Length: 288
View (tube, helix red, strand yellow):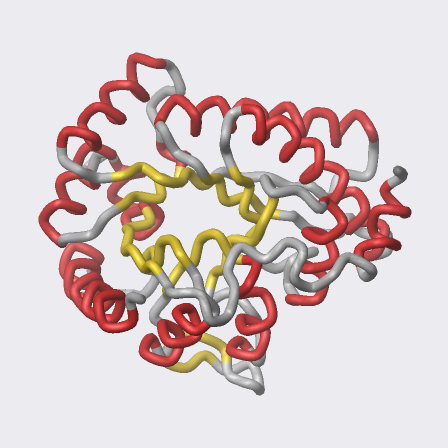
């Protein structure tokens, strides 16, 4: 099947064929820390990934989504001790976050993108993580968005084929560019039509009508990121209603992690523990 045929047939895929959750199913909610919340400290090496394991214990969360940008290495010398530390502390490294740009206009560039995805799948598997959040990327200048979506679907499909051999799910994040709108995200994921490709839902990334777009893709989400701000119907940044979001997540029958990704101005050393306390309480309240 060609890329064009994949997208052309996506609309014919039944709406219930791929969703990870199902309305009416009892929710099972867990909480997590996204390492990106401490991006400055990790970049400056004033904080380590080991520190995140201990913070998870101290704040009572279950898991970690490890942004890989500041990994000192991808060798076993780094990865395996980190995995062991997490296990001994009852913390799950359930996800990693990597940079990808799947809207590549040439076969050679798409091949390179697939190779990069495969590399990170192996890293995730070594850490024991069952999920990677990936980005669709941006439409190249002068290209049509629908054609760029075909390229993204091709890369995601090929990446998912390999990820499935390692038991890792690729979560396509709503992260601007080709994934700026819920409709396009669903088109790509349905075209791939794989149990190893789904949606990583970032509640703070839609540029307008966020709650409406979240409701559209939530049934396909295998990871959910909570932020302190969200966009209203007019595109203005407002305080995120976590109570409303958690109820939406639970009503969708979601089973998985709600990860705090902190991006506001307050020092994360004080803000993150406080916000995780709130997230923990909401997860407990709405758990099935």
